[in-house]
Length: 82
Image 1 (cartoon, rainbow, N blue to C red):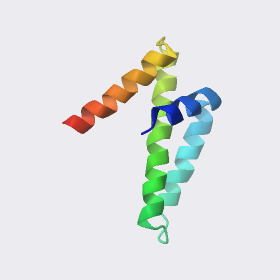
Image 2 (spheres, one colour):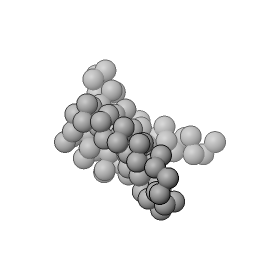
Image 3 (cartoon, rainbow, N blue to C red):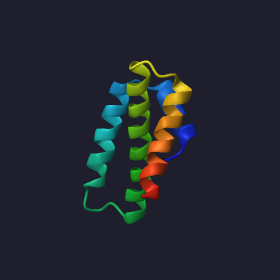
């Protein structure tokens, strides 16, 4: 998870574009010939896309962009600490 990447995705793509990209990456990970390294890279991209989608959701509910990004970062860090 990289907050600057999530911010960039949030600012430059629509939720519909993110959803489509997410579907493609998930399908890619299911192919037999995909290496572990490729799955790791796709997984990092999936995490960032999901973060951008969550930020879009929070902003649509009235949160400021900065607050939404910080809340998502704290949520992820909190789940790692458990």
